[in-house]
Image 1: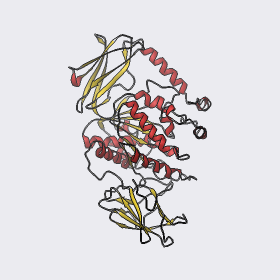
Image 2 (image 1 turned 60 degrees about the horizontal axis):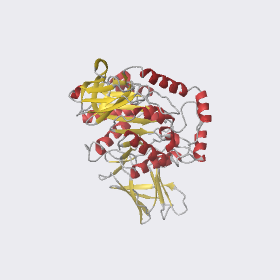
Image 3 (image 1 turned 90 degrees about the horizontal axis):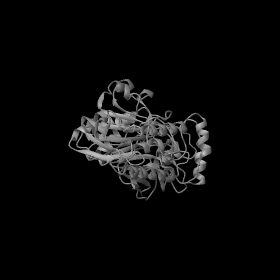
Image 4 (image 1 turned 45 degrees about the vertical axis):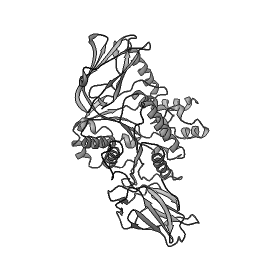
Length: 485
């Protein structure tokens, strides 16, 4: 794999001291080797452990020392492991059904005094929340109904573990963060999407929820993937060079190294992902990059966990390549081709002049319902947006059929916005539509023989077509006669 020192040094010279982080991490690990036993930052008071699982606990210590792990939820079960020659140890402790607060003891040898005690430990559901700025975006930066939402965010059983934004060219064994109990003051500084997702799960499942937030605004998908899993091509090098930025990393693997790898192999229920805006200028590789990201994360966490995306919302990107629409298309393609993935559609909550739309509540609750339906099996229907299934021509009209619209489609206005149709000349014109159950008849007086239809397939059109449950129809483009997945 090529070394990208020039670009990294440019970025480092702008003020992001990644090398300092790597050095500090190295010094921290060295210091830990002189203590009987120590834990990474992931293991602190207020931690949430995944319920009904075999949960890895790991750390550092003196070689050949025996480490004992005891959880107060099952004090009869003691896990013993030996520190290896490199000063590392790892054991697995079983968790039962949700509950808490508990304590977790980590002993060094048989000395009862040499121990680490984690207090206020909860057992519940743990989710990784990652991506770029719309995942990172906090209530303090602006959300709908901001003051009331912050004031009401008193949920002792919801916990955040929000990683500091740090990058590295090398794999890091530790990170900078701590577990925090959700209070209004904590919530206002943490991911809004993660909070509304976690709140929805907590309210519906009635279990503690742990939210590991690893997000950095402006970042492209490549930085979240192991470097050796990103294609090393001249085209990719050119793309990386064009993204050079003083405020966030652009090098492949940079944030995987420091904001994903230190979490391994913690047990999680699944992951939610809100990213894609920064890949809009070169959207062609996005599908392959996301397939690689999901595969790598699942392999490294040792679990084929559910992975739920948020489709990027409408915004006036002023693109010249229709990149945002192509990114959305790639995001939907992931759902059709990668098992245990899902997507929530947001083309009704976008804002023409705001890349960070304020309606984060809908995003979080839609992600929550997707998890409740697909992963937890508590919802049978009503949690997925309609997707185009089939397109045919009947008497000069395009007839489109949609999934997840068994009770019918509805339009919020008199006219369906963003709907266009073309004939053999490939010239798209504004189309009219007639709703018939879960079908849409699309036509235009200027198009006698329809060949293509598209809906909200552009940068910024806010959709107004929904199913009866109020979920927006996914943007699409289609050639007539196609059977669509």
